[in-house]
Length: 125
Image (cartoon, rainbow, N blue to C red; front, side, top):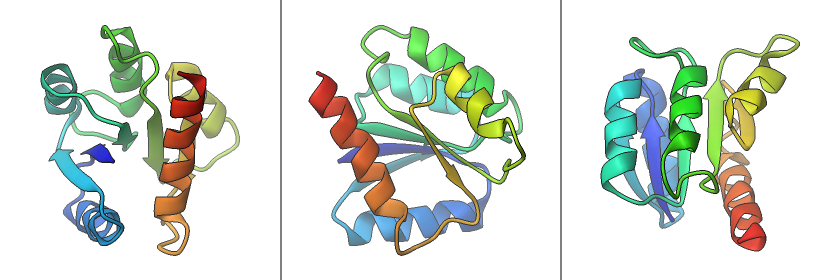
């Protein structure tokens, strides 16, 4: 899979990169919402991993903008966030995310979770 990761924390980005590449996935990153949206407009991805707490646009707004792009309504956007209070999952899903993974991520299940959301996209196509 070709995955876009929109994440501003270099440690989180490094961990995601290591795990994704170890499972044979390609990886592109953006450190803020505006850059992530621009990358999504320029290239097709199989999934987007989206931090919610970004320095410019919050992840909810990024998700809302991404799902309005042509051909992006079916691309799974997966919130990967430390926001884990009651209602945070529902807020991410309402913004357009198809999945939700809490930080700190579990390295043993992280990639499997992402692959599961991508399979759901392909099954719905």
